Length: 142
Image (cartoon, rainbow, N blue to C red):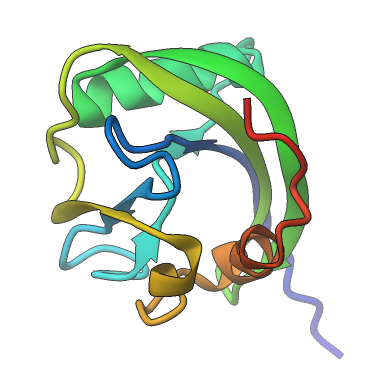
């Protein structure tokens, strides 16, 4: 029997409310051609060695969205195993303190309500998180 070991990465994501409608949150569509191409996800990325979650989330959003974030409390944590990768996903409340989000590391950006997000093809790791968001089980978002 062959055992396949996948690498595990810690990924942090931001729940960023819209600037006008705080019931809509920023989501991004992955770039074409890569893994999980054109699927939607919450902004963020991998935690590098030596980084805290909060530092990694601020760095990723600076690099991929050209914004500075204030990172708030942890809202949700889960784990998902893809055929090539195990993702430990952690969602944080966040808000943009400077800049306007630009899709530097994404195919597209959009602000959607949680119910609207359910109509989009999301990465599998994000589905349980999205279900919790729709059900209102993440608690206070600030």
